[in-house]
Length: 231
Ligand SMILES: Nc1ncnc2c1ncn2[C@@H]1O[C@H](COP(=O)(O)OP(=O)(O)O)[C@@H](O)[C@H]1O
Ligand SMILES: [Mg+2]
Image 1 (cartoon, helix red, strand yellow):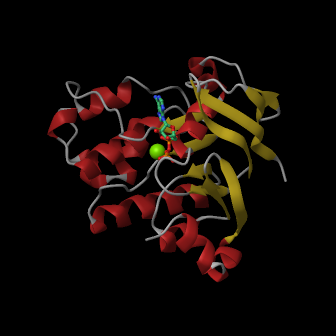
Image 2 (cartoon, helix red, strand yellow):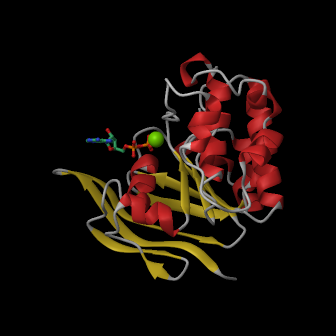
């Protein structure tokens, strides 16, 4: 299988505060790989290290066969990694359409295709970012990332804080993206949808992967989920 993204022994810190103690994970082309764990364990820092936002201190990060550790964030994005950041970060004073246009790059994903994915967002085209519900903001953040037309989509906290019906809409969208062959690094805390959509799962604890396996293995390892993720 073609490797899309590979992290080997990545270490990262904020100043003197070390957070990642040797993160390793692999995403093959077309795979949905999850990163799960309790708050504060280093999921977002892993994402930030991949994107070059919090440059890793050591280890290897390889994307599409190229080393990307040390690359500036805009270079990483241009190389083809599209991020839906935790907290969504949409522009509050731009309309939905303007938010999307600000990120669009030529490719298969167009504004029309994004609006087909999310009909409820299409109905809010002219509304400003700060007039949207949390779910609409997340659809906008996903649409904006898709418009980058990258080969890997990273979604940090895909459904956090969203109502059940909205969560269903997000999961349905991610399933369609997977069916189209999109590689996805997915961070979330809902076990059942992750088991359904994820090909492989990585459990993080204090900055290192302590368990990894496919959905069958995770389904059987209920102790792992309870100990490191669940309530
Ligand atoms: N900007 C920052 N400066 C200092 N420490 C941070 C910063 N961001 C996160 N941390 C710390 O790094 C650790 C991991 O955080 P994070 O990667 O956000 O975890 P997660 O996404 O798994 O909840 C936490 O202890 C958190 O307090
Ligand atoms: Mg986080």
